[in-house]
Image (spheres, rainbow, N blue to C red):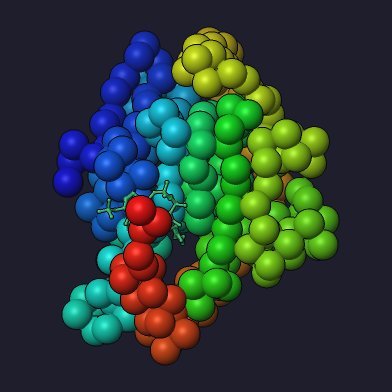
Length: 252
Ligand code: COA
């Protein structure tokens, strides 16, 4: 539903705001489609010089909507292609991307930031990628980018063990740029985005491209992960995990 993604413009900055607080910003197929379109439009619009991703207080995102995954798993839906269109669009952005996370940042709520240039997080933020616990495999080229940033063992603790990473630890390891108080998050994100938007755009574009290195490897990994991911989505392991989440009893 379009109200779950708010696309706003502030000068030369386009903000994509995940806005489904009641579901901790779990991302549905329609939300991915809206984000993909917004990114693609802003990439083509010379008036926009920087992308921003934000969530709501307490939740950047609880990851992919698990009822969408369950529907694919049971055969009720044929595919969840929107996420696999969103990821290459994000990874292929030529303009800088700044993000701000407060609180819950699970699955793509963590891996999305691997494609950002500056990520701000609050002390309450915990990054988690429990793909294996869901019977799934990493996405967003996280199997390539996370070990590159964190080293194999810390990346494996996140992607294999499903351990969380606090904002402070993420900062120390270079996964994010800064930790700021929750009430300062938006100001910090917009400050950085506006500063980037004022830079000479072509020099910034080339600099970013040089820093990000060989993108062919990232594209290839996105495809390789997507093949495994799609196959695992239909596995019994995944179906059991999605069903367990949907049927879980909340503590009273
Ligand atoms: N997909 C679908 N719905 C989700 C969701 C997701 N990924 N994450 C949260 N929700 C829903 C919950 O079902 C609940 O809905 P309800 O109020 O109709 O029952 C609502 O959002 C609030 O979530 P809740 O679990 O009550 O909040 P919490 O603060 O206790 O826990 C999480 C938050 C993120 C720790 C927990 O919801 C969770 O583990 N979610 C799944 C995360 C995940 O595995 N994501 C997929 C990664 S690929």
